Length: 255
Image (cartoon, rainbow, N blue to C red; front, side, top):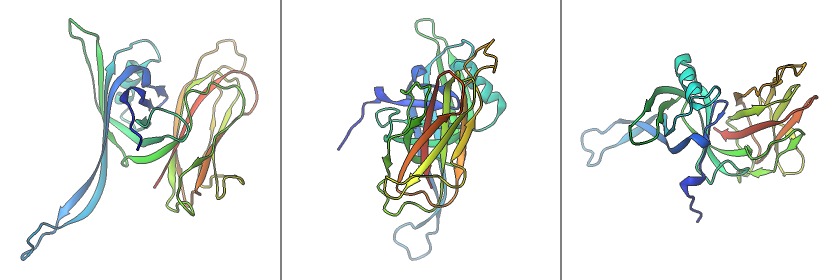
């Protein structure tokens, strides 16, 4: 039995590593049911309906360019879903459990009490529900070279067959050329192949090619995976050329 302390939680919202800004989060998964109780039943009977999930978080305001407040307000105004990876299992470390989804923000607010810090709160609907997943590459790795990720064992004998999805969060990218981000799977943890059905993403360069006006170019993606995902998985992140550093969080959830 392994318990976790909330202080180690990590959170990634679209291209932002939101961990330094929040101190409370709630990810709730529900299943809607229909009452099919008929005459003669002594107990109620139900049939399953649709799954649903919601997410909320609270923390502290930071209004600088590229920081949490402006980013979340822009996402709210865009009225578009974005990937979220919530890590209550001791933080964002390879092999740790996570909750993955695509969020559609429903509420964002600031509060500024005279006797305390300015706060930030958000509420969101998980578009397509929330799924249980694993971290394949974490935010602790600032790299300028190829990352061959540690093997993550799902424990699912024979793998899973219903597909899944991959969340990729790139909160820092100063590369002068593209980065290839792949998820690979294996039946035995030794022989690896690229995950079929969309488990790869080319991340654009994060600075101008001439490097005259360098800037970190954060971004995020959610990739849908079709078909079988074998028992063992890992991330493979390859800078194609150039110079500069990157941080890429990769997480996989199975359907």
